[in-house]
Length: 310
Image (cartoon, rainbow, N blue to C red; front, side):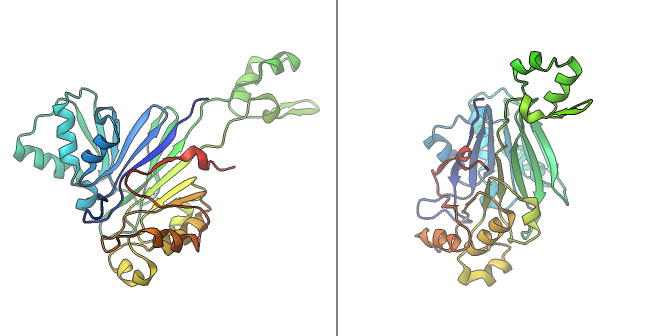
């Protein structure tokens, strides 16, 4: 099985570009699927620098309508048209994303060479929003100053493969083979044929949860439970936790505690305030609460298969 689950951080800063860091954007490649998550100012520049083919992006996921997460989107969409994109593109985001982009296009008289569709979200619980071969995507509300969504990307595998030699050895019927492919055990008079003994092992699915921007409330731990990797914003260090709460943000310490409660494998930090030039303090603060922390920075490329849950 040839699997890919690769994340590239395009932008890691919060509202203002600073110290070589652009606002939030990420590129996620899962097998043949290519996704963009948020599209802050400077996203196009990073796409070019990291040799990402913009016209191959299939779906875009926008967390909320603050400028540092969406102001790069109109330019990216029109650049796709200038590059003669033909494939349809879908954009998931909160209510208002369609009006925002279409208003800008109307006044600028933008020409689009491809079909653009908007899927506006109005959710109160974690909800599956897209299923593709090999991956399913859910959205869930997080806790910011305006409607904001996190996204969970999870591997999904097809039917299990029966070990060929076992078919003859146990004289498996067609119906029994179908049941094994579904992951079921086979009950026979006086015995049980266990699925794990008759099928090739399936790897544990990798999952990635993107959460920006949000207060790190305990209620999110159940939503993020057992995620392989969690990106959770760390706008401030913990000495500014009161300001973080007032502005709907989190500190590195708070995000690390949440990752621990969710029993994640790895925490990726990001959305740093421009008051911080050096980011190492974020790593150290998070490591005091959670053992596996990646300092998310522009250009960071992370193979999430390396952090697969055992």
